[in-house]
Amino acid sequence: MLLLYEHRLGSFTQAAPGRFNKGMGRGTAHNTTAARWYQLFNNGGFELDDQPRDGRPSIFDLDALKALIREDPHQSSRCLADRL
Image (cartoon, rainbow, N blue to C red; front, side, top):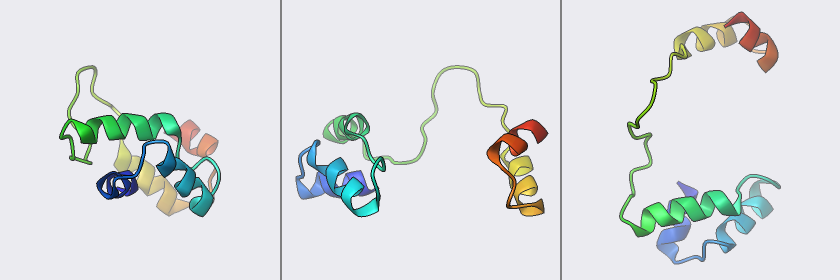
């Protein structure tokens, strides 16, 4: 969403990640990510939701993950992965 905002302000692709990283912390945004999104925006692709794509559909059970997190929010990602 922030990249779309920057794009609409007319910011250069290379400038936006630098501002994000300065304000939100180093590594928040990357130039490659900004370039990919700017290319989509320049081609009229302003839809920010995930789009359907080719390939095998995900079999990940998001509801099961949410239930495990509610059960114990202090679990590590490794522990969650083992349990799923």
